[in-house]
Image 1 (tube, rainbow, N blue to C red):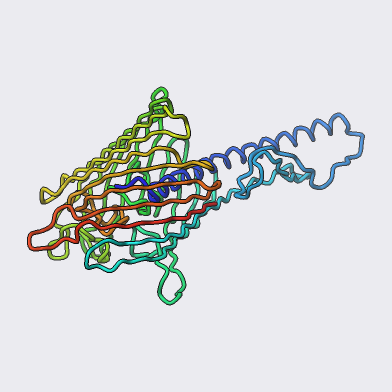
Image 2 (image 1 turned 90 degrees about the horizontal axis):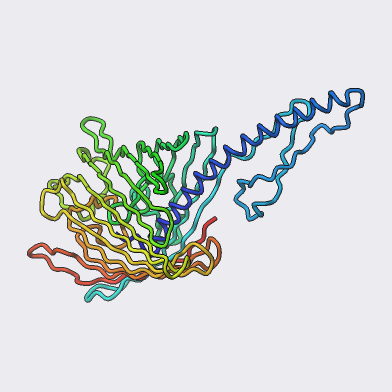
Length: 432
């Protein structure tokens, strides 16, 4: 599961960045409208002055400035309240539109240690991840965007690169490229885009960017927020034969922030994996195979519940997260998984601390391993404990330490298990 540790931090950062991006698009719509109204106001004022002082010579310069106090969309650290000069062409009254371009990114440097398995060499390594995002608002309801990320382009659930290979250059790929349509409370993506679902890493790794089409609609029932989301996920397209795809949907609700707050999300994901020609060896991972194909179908019911208690104040919320998944398409009884997290504290402002303990277990075909977590060597069929500490050193700068202790849940007859394994990660993360 692991909506915790650095991956919980990654998921929170990704969701916050998506929310910021959506708000920036809305902001640009408002700025464009304000610019239009300012232009109309200037024209009206110029017309009024022409009537009242038509005998007086004009003293206006060729580019009379108009001062706007709207928040700038720049990604610099300039104060949001700083006034912005919008030039106006005196002969036409047309106001230059505010910037429609948004740019952000993040970088993470990690030390990882794998140790404590008898007869197996301890392994230490350095890991790096870098991501750059950009979006451009074509108009008030359409934007184009994308993301460049490090990592193996054949691995959909990791953007990490091990520092090795005699100092070879890093591999970078286009991780996302999409059209975003957002008329009103409706939002749709086309292309390869951010995840639309509420999720934990029990089912969806934080780095998975689906390709195809998604749609979401947000509404309110009193003070309760509601969101419905749908996804058509093109997993693999076959030249001659049936394709692999997933059709899924989710309904999510969130009560208003209060002393006790609740969230609930129920999703169903129906995979049809008819083609595996485009799959690499790492895509199969720990699911059961027969003659190079999946033994099971994957029809997943995923239920996520979150309770937040703020009895210790805003800086120290106590949060319980539970996720249960059942695969109705499994060919065996190894079809269920669950995970729980207990978090104390928050990790979004300077000086914040957050402490996490998590436990998760899944059976072999409970989830599709190609898109589940990659925090350890076991994508399914595992028992796993997680301890994590997060600290926000400065705005947009975070430190994290995460310890995993894990092992196989069920060992096939005639096979030996390595027993409990240990993995420690120390992360230094910065975003802009």
